[in-house]
Length: 436
Ligand code: ADP
Ligand code: MG
Image (cartoon, rainbow, N blue to C red):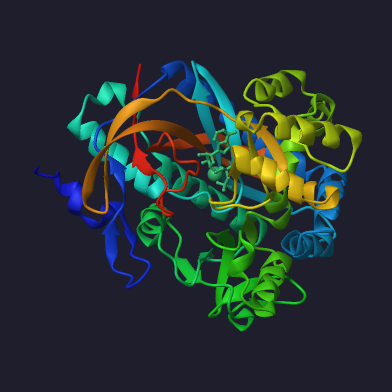
């Protein structure tokens, strides 16, 4: 089969983990049928989720309560919370690039999670949509300007930084992983940002300099306007105390953090569970009834496994009918969830205190569709399910929202029997929807 030119170019690549040469990203060869009602609903909800994130960090009592509980049994959250507590106030300038992920049952969308740190794949999914809209009926494949819109948001955030702290050309600092594989995805985004971009890892705090008075952050004497994390979301990445020193130092600077430490904590799955409580959500949304009910319309059932009577009851419910649920710890990046009979085994092995670091979620069963995927040069026919991600960008100064928009999408498709969802981790493939 002859492949279109883009498929064999570097535009749709990752780095191979072993020898860091580019390998092609796994993709679905044809667009996947997808409910247009569900798609449009997910896009239209994004500003509400952006705002929910801002309102969550403006509710420090809630973040403190949840994080301090989790910190008792989770060293990673303990360290994040420690940095959070070192901040005396909320950041003046707020910028977040997030992605809200959904699965669809019928025409109804259910949020899987809100990624508030390192929401990746906007670059590659923008490129794939451009390609597939050339190959297939463009009217049925929604335009995807994700990496351009996110780039424009960076430009706007830099402009805000310059208004606040006059300087000539502040740079964007990308914090990346040592063995970063997603370099091409990042490159598409970098190409959409007008400011200079500097890439560093968290390994060496001495490369970051923060002026003790002004809190101005410089790298190689270049002033940094935005620190953008494409790393730092899982414990294994912090290979020594130096990594934590870097994170704390960057957080203490006046540069805009994307995300700031509070927004990182606000993306915890435990926060997602707590916010399913209608009163907590309404209070966090500062009594906005309309947006509260809009948000709630996309929530799946999520249950606490706290050391309480309710947690005990939810635990018993999961043990008696594990196929109904997904069990999730407070981790990001794929490969962490438990399904089916293993939920029972795991729950029975945990102490009530350890159990409270997990959340229980209704398992969503999306429609199964046939798909042809290409992965590691092999073309395979699979029975597939898909997960839609919607990117969101929000900029605020103190309480004034300056930008609040959806910013394109990501569709991932995976074999029906696969439980996890990551593309770089090899579970799913990049795809585009064919709306119907
Ligand atoms: P992570 O932070 O590891 O990405 P997620 O909550 O996104 O955690 O879960 C990983 C994957 O597990 C998702 O991409 C999805 O494929 C699957 N998954 C998560 N929650 C559910 C659910 N409630 N129902 C069905 N599948 C789910
Ligand atoms: Mg996920």
